[in-house]
Image (tube, rainbow, N blue to C red; front, top):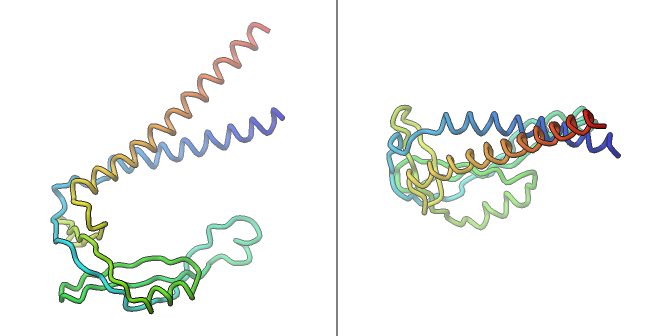
Length: 168
């Protein structure tokens, strides 16, 4: 039993360190809201579903036998002449991709242009540049907080174990 606890603890420790790294990196690299220009809310329409090969994130035998897998991407575009596009990964179901394409339902998305690169991102229509950036920061702060908390608990547990070993 203690072997399993130790393995799970080490796995948690490694995962929390990875999350801590990703969270800190994310906080540092989030662009300020002032670096985005709001291009307004646009209506996007699905126009094609394409199969795309991506790396198989499975492990073990499945990964060895199938290093890539096929997912279906729905491409959306605006019809207002702006030329904006948006892509959605629908997973590995061709029928689901075709259903979305056949339904032809439009999606409202806000376009935020990145001033320094000239590229753009699309976000939910109700978000602004400020709320988008705050959401990104909040996500990364949670990652740092939770992983940091786990690391503190691991350190406290290690200290308690070492103290009990000295007494016993």
